[in-house]
Length: 87
Ligand SMILES: [Mg+2]
Image 1 (cartoon, protein in one colour):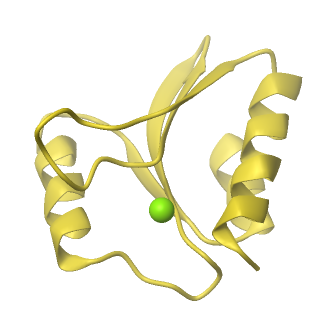
Image 2 (image 1 turned 90 degrees about the vertical axis):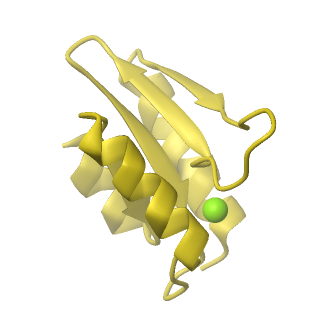
């Protein structure tokens, strides 16, 4: 499944839950996750991938840097993955 289809589903699910979701881009830096999800009880960064596609090394490094600072970063490549992360 294409990344854009999974992203569309993520946006719908977050909106249905009453949350907020934003597209993300760092200024002057690469490898930002695709989205920030804000729910009353949790927040997370989401990197979306087409089904079976993996993160690039630079993305993995950025995710690790963020996790070391306590951020929650999730990589999702399926509709089931969206449901799991939001459950
Ligand atoms: Mg992506």
